[in-house]
Image (cartoon, rainbow, N blue to C red; front, side, top):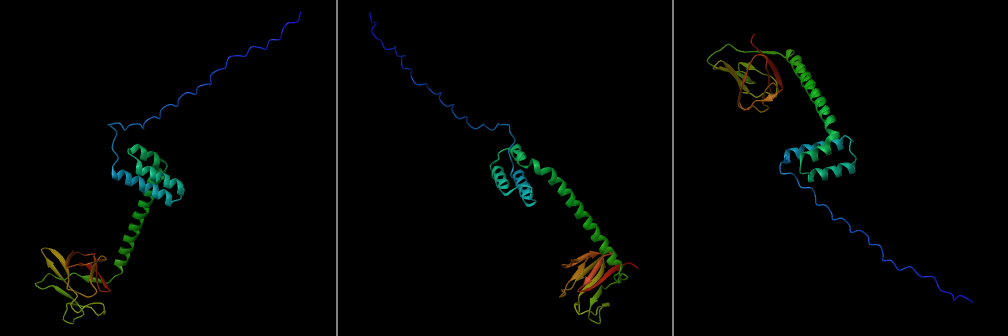
Length: 206
């Protein structure tokens, strides 16, 4: 006897797998109420460090732009510290070197002025009297100057209240004390370098 053919039973259809729902986006972390506020001065210092780093070639153009943008958006000092951490150490060292160079330059300049002053002709401080010492090209002056840059009535020197006072008398080319132009009158003493136009002297007490 032949057994009739029966097709194999089919497995029941399965429902498609459900993908998990995406997690909701996290809100930005709030700034703690006790966090120190970023001041404009701190931001300006950080921007200055970034500009200095770019000028020295320590930051590429893209890195410089990226950090500048982050610095302008920063809300806390620690955010700025991250952006400038690799620039601060050398920046401090650079400032120290520049400061040392400036001090050395100033010292060299002072030595140069002192050496130059020793080579200048002396202008003896006059004996105290009722009249000031007039200086200029006029023959009637107590100190007559022959240089064309001196005015006829250029300046006067007098003792007032125990101080020597040098007064410019409206000269054309000016009066200077230690390289600075005199406006009106100024107190001077022995050792100062005084100039009348292009004629220069070193004041001396004897």
